[in-house]
Amino acid sequence: MFTGIVEELGVIHGLELENASPSLGMKANVILSDMKIGDSISVNGVCLTVISFDSDSFKAEVMPETLRKTALLDLKRGDRVNLERALSLGDRLGGHLVSGHIDGVGMIRKKQRESNALVIEIQAPPEILKYAIPKGSMAVDGISLTVVEVMGDSFTVSLIPHTAEYTTLGFKSAGSRVNLEGDVIGKYVEKFMSARREGQESQKGLTLKDLAEKGFL
Image 1 (cartoon, one colour):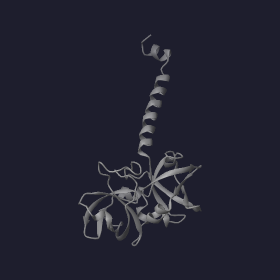
Image 2: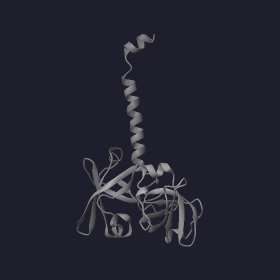
Image 3: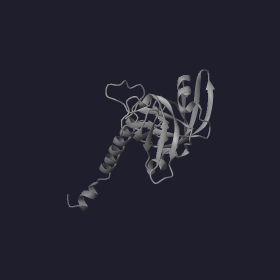
Image 4: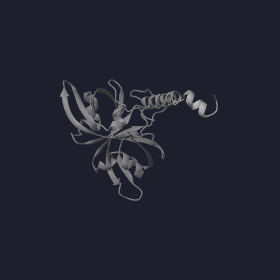
């Protein structure tokens, strides 16, 4: 579990995504301070497991399913990525609860300045857009952001200068793909409400005729 507060920008230096055992090698600094084999690290919002590390880098394995459902395949050597260590009990929850399990991939449609803010419009598929509500939370490339506006097939977020400078969204351009994860609380609410509706519809379908045909009347 993560918070969506990026700790540092790492740099891709090892890329073996086409092999039988896909992996990523990343240069880092801050997150290496207490790293252990088996640790979970959010890489552009994707929860990956550390399999090796040294004084200035670490390596993580990637499953084929992860490559299919995220934008990690777009990465090249030298690319910067958002890095965050897993949340520890007792830490401040500065962003929102982020699982690191990507719901799908969106695309940056437009970036524009508004005073000191950078407003980004992101095109998203319907199955993700349904979790986007104004003033709600959305993880974009692992960054905890607040949704500003929701349109037909897209939503906007607004970045303060610090976020634009220290995360991937500051330098990604229109047309770039981004990993998206909807608010986990919203998903549970949706599941609960869906089950409740299905139960109500099932009850509505029971009539006196049905009871008579089953021998209860």
